[in-house]
Image 1 (cartoon, rainbow, N blue to C red):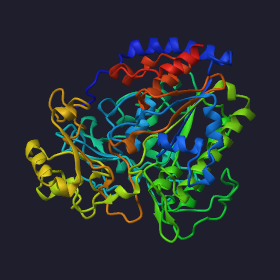
Image 2: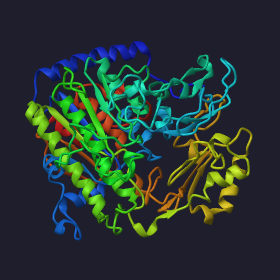
Image 3: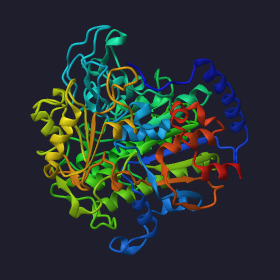
Length: 572
């Protein structure tokens, strides 16, 4: 079964794009207010609205109470700040980024989590790097259903920064590092591997802008995030994705925006992954900033002649790991209280990102395109809990564990599988049941263990179908919709990790209330307190570039609106 929502007919879409191309050309001829040539989208993963508030106003207990984000504060002086913005639900990076670039929720994009489940697909040919076992696939036969791995597991070699791409320089890789044997397969297409850009069901801002004649680029943390190119994989002219979960290496020629060299490894005690060290994650992000500065200068990410993209950007990882990491012999990140007073380590990560934003803005000015560029700073997701006293690491009594013990979920989703990829659980539990299992019985089992799993709220039946789609393989059903979603009490995380003190994925305020700042030198500063979603970023970007927001499939299907305050400023 394919997408359960209708997409735009090819002829109508072609006519819309032809009209859009004229708009792009007009915008590129006359810079200035109302004539945006470029949109720069930045995701500071994990950055809450309150983090932005504290760092531009100051908070007692850090930096002598003085503000500590001068560059973000400067953008705010000519920007619209949305304080009640919600990320996607689940608040995972995969659906979080999808919301930003498609304007849609998982019900339309089909992206629930980087590791999820699809009843209509079959296992990869070989086991992925994160443990999803290879299995059979019968061409044009009945699917068995499979966990879907679109994390680092699809890399040729996820221990390498270049993902193991053949012949690639140590810091390169991108989509060349995807191993097609590790991709889930579609029996309806003869068991062809499903690449990330074909796993997403809708088009994206990059595919729309590219089709309208614009040059596009994106920088992210895994090759799998190349789904941003949209179906067919043609929407991105330049995609860069050094593997964040790879072994740490020296980065000659790279230094942070605070002047710290990455030519030698900063933290040699944590070499297994960039994500294990407060210092090393900064060098990882600095590598991506270096690539972005190249793109601003009219080059590809690695310095070859190109042009400055019409729409482009990157994500930062430093703040998220500043929130959730507890590094041995260094200290804990996170917060000191429920007012979001940052720990010393998190404070350093926020300062690092702010300094990077300063270099990015200065590069736009040096290029002479600052006044032609709309800058959007937000986050794919937040992190929970902010209040450190609420954190509970529960790796044993998880919803998936109880259901696995009762043989109610697929083995590929089971925490009892000793070599498997594991369940879709962080501070949320997203659950798919075995065929024939009674959903009511599964819910009853979970509710009878409510205390053990820290049950906050449970969604199933109509409460899933209303906000997503009805799950199943029958007519009108969605093969990717979960049967049950469990959101635990705030602070409960379904992990036994001793190195993390927070996580994301859930529906709680700390998970979803992210910063959103839309800035342009022409804009009047505003604070907007009305409910907003990160999905509204996508149609706003097209509107800013003179394109029709309804060229986005998800915008038409879900009715996602342009941010009205931005629209008013663009028309002023």
